Length: 235
Image (cartoon, rainbow, N blue to C red):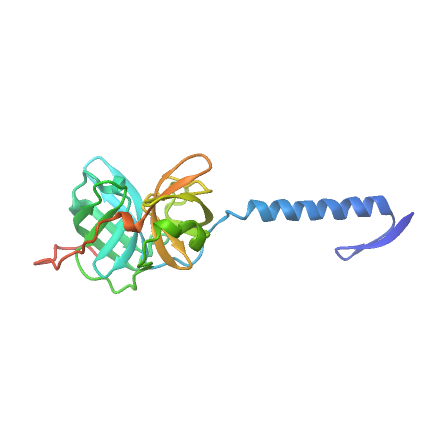
């Protein structure tokens, strides 16, 4: 049996019905595969101004991580990104995108968590950018039930000049850590882990198919005090 088919505007006559069914089956299968492949897809969109590229510039070393603004003078990142580095060589470029940025802030002091891979960056001046909001409750005990799908936003090494996002799911957690079902590239260390727009954790480590975030509650309470003066800045 044959059918007359209008295939994307091209009329084709006498097409065997088996061929039509096989074509429709392959199109349906391709759509399913594409949907699965994009479940954890990365995207490039307008940069979130509260998320920045954290740059370190030294005599023989240039590297970057990601940082998230959580207060007028405070940002969070992974401790391994800044441990042992001079604060004066750390620069936060909020909303960095293709060489442009919303604000350039320097780090004047560091507060490192003693037992977790998370650090507070005390900035040299107040930011005019609205910071990310964090859950105030202890997120550790109920992470999997409350947060479900989460989003990472940062600056992976392969696309270091624009924010890249990734949707993941929490697969396991304890009082300080959450395991996610997606990997993260170098450069995403310190990236905020967001649930419904709220900050719940900071990206810490990654393996082939999973990654680990440190929950914000792992950072001991503290705040960045007003500096006596601001260091000179290159804007």
